[in-house]
Image 1 (cartoon, rainbow, N blue to C red):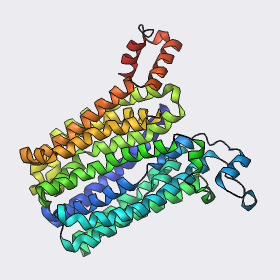
Image 2 (image 1 turned 120 degrees about the horizontal axis):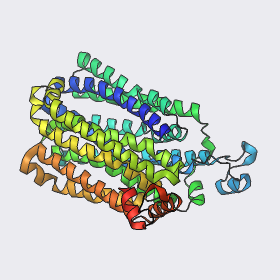
Image 3 (image 1 turned 90 degrees about the vertical axis):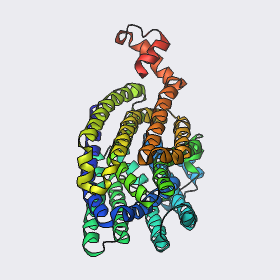
Length: 462
């Protein structure tokens, strides 16, 4: 717990820097472009993040899961399995190198598939999104830059080595360049293209910084590039890859698709306002992702105490979520007007509702990570998928009912159902029930009713 809290401190420090600088470029973009212009800008960014979310494999999880031991592998069998000629530099000598090679190969596949998906998506934009024709090439370019800037693999290497301070320093490059670029765009190119360019440069810069930091922390052996080596050693590999990819796609692309569909059903102005409300109100979702990224390596390394760690983190998250929602209620109206301008003030209640959704996600982050660490990534995906798809289907009705507030309620409902589902899945997971029963046998003094397996489940998981 001590190391986990320290690592979370570094990650949250990075988030704090990001949050402060985000206010700079958000204020400049909204006040320069106006409600509708900011809507176009938000649509382009959301399209890039949607493509990246769908195409990107959560390779950092593979590195943490299969590279965690860092143990040497048998040289002869490894050479035969991977086709590596030992006379040309020797076989791959560790699980970490193999996991990294698999992750990089998946990243290359992501970029290639993502470019095709970007072209198809941008060609279809005039049919469903209020985006001017002259911005389509800019949109495609931003999608390609987002794909090239995929950085899950170097992030995984840094987390595997618990180099959270190094990762935080590298990730700070993004908000610094983004804020500086926004200032330059405001001064010399006060258009949608200017602000999109600032975003694109910051994406490339942070990816480069993370790769450099990862290479200094862990040797990257490009001879290990392979889509078959890890699956030969781990039968469940492809199921885990697909499950985490789909789950990550739902988390990232689902959120961005929600923003895009708000524009489809409500127009560019509503899209721009909802994006501001989402960025301010759902800052807690980013915090939830931070908790998840910090806790997963600990859960993988300390399987015997995974349940207890997740329970404690959920309790801490609950307190933090309540405080954040109260702050949104008290200071939100002033904050949204001070940052974005008076015309965005009407989105205050949407921001508050999204803040509540963020608090729910914050509590659920450790539960989702617990499922993934126990090899139940496919269950986490299903639990996340059903509420997300339900929210997207009901979005048009929600907007007709109450505009941006209706869309925010759709997000809140989706998050609530997902977290309830995570809890139910943990209670009914055989692997986690075994851990609970084992802890109850080994430490009966911790709980008077620990001898009762179902009661222990309820108390420890709850």
